[in-house]
Image 1 (tube, rainbow, N blue to C red):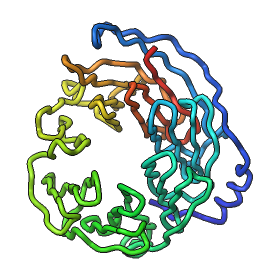
Image 2: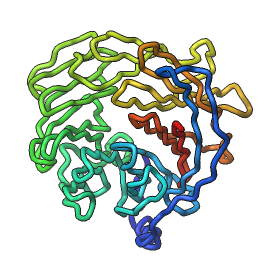
Image 3: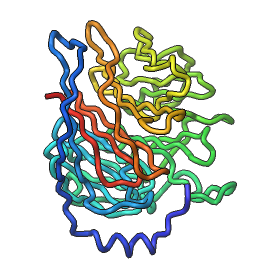
Image 4: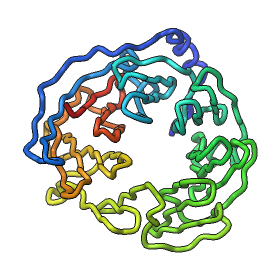
Length: 343
């Protein structure tokens, strides 16, 4: 990750402080499928939504994260801006201007955490005001690379959170006071490739493709084959998705095509999985949107062939799936989203 040039960004950002971005919607053709879902047919419609309202040509204004709490309330995060919608993406409200270096954690519409250049921000009033916890349990610059080290954060409530060191990736820390102090709870010579906590005590890490589980906030760790069913989390493996309790290993779509790979995915609370596939062997039509329907007769359906990207270094980099199967897709170096929703 490159070091953020704060001075340049702040000059650019100041021009955007009072922009409220409203979407302009260009309806695409209705996409019908022949796949029955609960004795009905899924029929998707796609629409383009402008979030930032600005021409985006750099990584800093790209929409790098999309997070929806429900069908109406969601957030879009760029490198320097945070936006919110209360209308399912039809209109967007500008919330915050910062050098954003990590994820937004929206626990509720009122309670959110955001990893920024100067620390970890917290709001308890939906973004009307923010407090900053500047303390991180490791150096902010990686000695080996010179890149910044904001860590990878996750919070489970207003006080308890976790952060992984991005320089020494085998280190995981816990806070019980919203990030003002930290204690190390996992130490490995090998990288943690994934971690998640469902509450202050119960969580897991994956190291060398081995799953370790804790039930006491990291005091003890036990090797497991899969997560217990108390977790609402799906783990991506080499060629399948692993559900809790190991009851369902969902093969990834299009595995018979060795050139087709999953670039990003999201899972809703129903166990549906939205996947973006990329085929690097094609000169055009590289991107596909697939959806796994987790019902009594689960199956993958092809939702759409995504539009080709005009910018040769752009990718479809973010996706969010709601419980109602609406899918929001972000393109790098762009301030717009593609939305697919069931009619």
